[in-house]
Length: 105
Image (cartoon, rainbow, N blue to C red):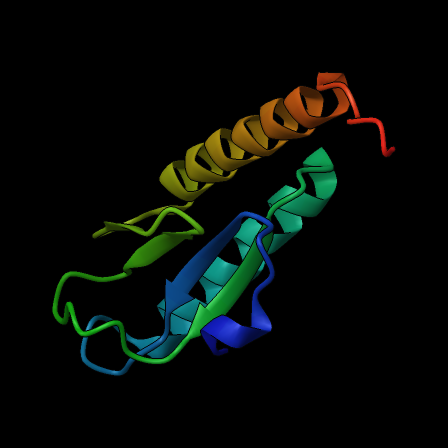
């Protein structure tokens, strides 16, 4: 995955580089978290990416669009991050729907 493949929607990006932790562990985390996000109806994309260059601290995830890194993430923590991102996305959508549309003259 590349940044240009992301829109402005919130995402949780899971590193699947080979130096952090076994790739199977990171990929399983991504799949489980993706399933959790879908089951909750969270407007959060869960994606995998190559090495994030914070090796030996994995599984490592990053949030998008506000880039924050988290190390040694397990499934419960990933779920909490999805919940936080979803809450932010919903608040932003609500804020945008409440803001008046400017009149064109």
